[in-house]
Amino acid sequence: MPTMSLYMGKEHCSFSFEAPALISQELQERGVGFALPCGGNRTCKKCRVTAYGELSPLSLEEREAFSPAELEQNLRLACCTVALGDCTVVLPKGTSFFADTFEELPSVGDASPFGSQGVAAAVDIGTTTIAVYLVDLTDSHIIARLGEENQQKCFGADVISRIACAQEKPGPLQKTVCSQLDRMIGLLLAQTNIPKQAVKGMAITGNTTMLHLLCGLDASGIAAAPFVPQSLFGVMYSARELFRSLPASCPVYLCPCVSAYAGADLVCAALSCKMEENSLVVDIGTNGEMALFREGRLLCAAAAAGPAFEGAGLSMGMPAKNGAVKEVSYQDGRLSYQVVGAGPAQGICGTGAVDALAFLLEQGALDETGLLLEEGHPFSPLIRKTKEDTAFLLGDSGVMITQRDIRQLQLAKAAIAAGIDTLLYRGGCQPQDITSVYIAGGFGSWLNPYTAGKIGLLPPSLIDRCQSVGNAAGAGACLCALSETFLVQAQTLAQTAQEVSLSQDPYFMEQYIHRMLFYA
Image (cartoon, rainbow, N blue to C red; front, side, top):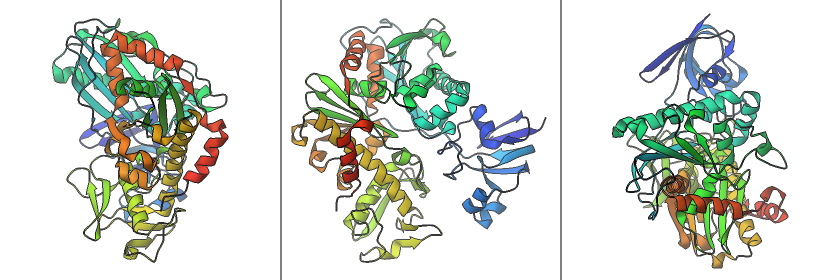
């Protein structure tokens, strides 16, 4: 059998495979953390690798994606390239770390459901990122934390893509996330010199789809009407069913969900924010989740925003890691930008894209319909005509925002904004009644509320009441691991919550069309 050799930085591995085989499929089946934002449908052209050896001829998609110079460097698209025999594939760096903005947890006044000695693990499985925490059961504090990109990204950037993959082959998705969690927990235990026998339990949160994939449950009911998941969780598992890095008898608590699209992550975020009457929590990501605390219970909704705010789907989009433009502003008569890390700009993440749109609106380079204007503003020299599109160059960064990127962001922001409008409307609440707006999630941690209000992502009248709460879902999982009282509160929140189904709400559709416009 032929051999495929993989290189990831200094790491190297080789394996035998049965030819012919699509490179992307081989990576998927072996749990390699390699991004396929479009799920391998040949549309995003981002699964770039360097490959040589016995390979299929260049496809039409590859000839369109690469310049002649790039083709000479053996750049290929993993979703288009078939390995016919012995070959070598060089992968880009695929794992990134992210910052948590919550430093302290609310005070815990009672014992953990896992006892009062040892440690517990708390996990937040997001569509884009996974966060793992070790918490001390004796004095209720976080010992260590670790965050990585969700390695299921090789099966698609959004939950629908992953559900579709799981319907064909459910095993690889479960194996991928369980293996990643095993490795992450093992790293934290090694870093802190804590033996695995000291781990007395684990609490896991995430959206409903991610928990289904973790447990190997059929998630197909989430993707089609009437959107009925197989489980809403709020149950204990045994570690032997999922993980090897924990004692076999270690209890694993799956935090409760509300519905197919109002997951345990939303419940845990509401729990950690200790929401007061008429407060709102919004987690802006691939699946924008939001909850209004009204008359003693949660009113929940979820809007399918797509992966644009996570960087996927944009021509030069990337996660918020080294090289990503994270801020764009107007200073001293010129465009200014900030990059994650100390190196040059390589692309743009979601917060940078929101800032860029606000900048374009303020400078008259973008009209309220989302059309990028070539003339009539001081930054006309930064407008570029590409082969397929019109684009705006972000100063001397080399990074561009295209007209197509703007449309993707427009669709995403309209879904979030209309979702908030509908939630308030169905809850009988006016914007002026809202006391606090908690912006949760990795994207929300770095979002500038002013620019978000400028483009209409958040209601401008609520901007002064917005506060970033970081990974509130992860904080909620920590609380469930540390306190029986908080665990019961999470169950109560989920059981008494009411969902507003946006897909069937005529008011949402009206607001969605209205919110497509940018504020001028």
